[in-house]
Amino acid sequence: MITRNFFLFLAKNDFIKNKATKWGPKFGAKSVIAGESLQEAMDTVRKLNEKGLSATVDHLGEFVYDKEEAMAAAEYCIRTLEAIEEAGVDCNLSLKLTQLGLDVDKELCLNNMRSILAKAKQYGNFVRIDMEDYSHLEPTLDILMELRKEYDNVGTAIQGYLYRAGQDVDTLKGTNIRLIKGAYNEPPEVAYQDAKEVYDNYLSIIKRHMLNGSYAAVATHDHNIIAEVKKFAEENGIGKDQFEFQMLYGFRSEMQEEIAREGYKMRVYTPFGNDWYGFFMRRLAERPQNITFAFRGLLSK
Ligand code: FDA
Image 1 (tube, protein in one colour):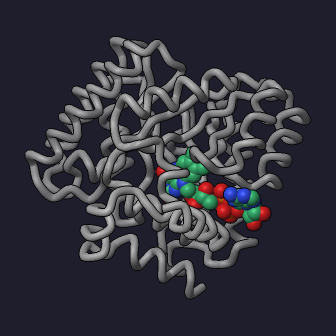
Image 2 (spheres, protein in one colour):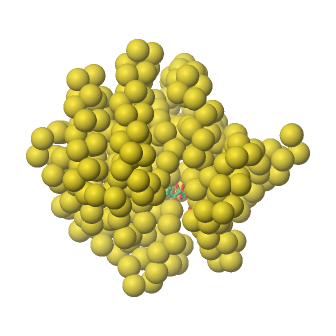
């Protein structure tokens, strides 16, 4: 689809990214990003908690190619965990390995993760490794396996658009996995292209992971998937403490609260920081209607 590819192209365009980042989160990005500072993020999380919603915060950033920058990003993750602890909020941390130096040096990235996980462990908190594009899948799984030898408070995300997703879910049996459709532009050699096929494979990996007896974080705005998962859990005697739903901050907020009221754990992925550009472009790529956010934001300036 032209719109999707266009926004995914923009997501990786450094020239436009640099310009846009200087403007700050305008054009609607504001409605899906919880501010630029840690303080703003904590204020947002507190408000979500008051509505019965859990959160996971993500200090936006990805594709770092510099050692110092990767170490600074790790430091910021540790500060974020400290802020969560100080604020006493119901919130964990999501991060991307390319932000922590995966493309610079795998050992550097691993050590950054070890420092972050040690701090999270100290606070009894959990860290989620977001899944990035296909070229980073194997290195991400390698790092996760290495970390899981020392830490049980870490998990990753598996993308239902990938043919191999089912096998990966089995390999990660017993771990807390976020299950998603997948947000990147992947070729037919590795990923389903057809929306119905993505839907079917996505639903099948969710069921597979739940039947494996492992904790599932079902991250989707798709009401059909949500309805299927609720029904499947009931039919198979899978308790509400065995899975949670996740949605992005600013998306289907009413539905988020409704799901929480029904007694399910509903976690809101709450991104913050000034590196919002790639994240925002991927959201526009997913759903052209999200562009209305952008125009609303533009008109309110
Ligand atoms: P999709 O966008 O396919 O929508 C399905 C249907 O739901 C639509 O046709 C419409 O009917 C309805 N709908 C969707 N959005 C709506 C809205 N805003 N308002 C009204 N109706 C709406 N990706 C990745 O590659 N790596 C990752 O680590 C993550 N992490 C992640 C965390 C969380 C919490 C979420 C929610 C998503 C991710 N993703 C991700 C993104 C994910 O892979 C996927 O690209 C998006 O969630 C879009 O797919 P959906 O399943 O949400 O439904």
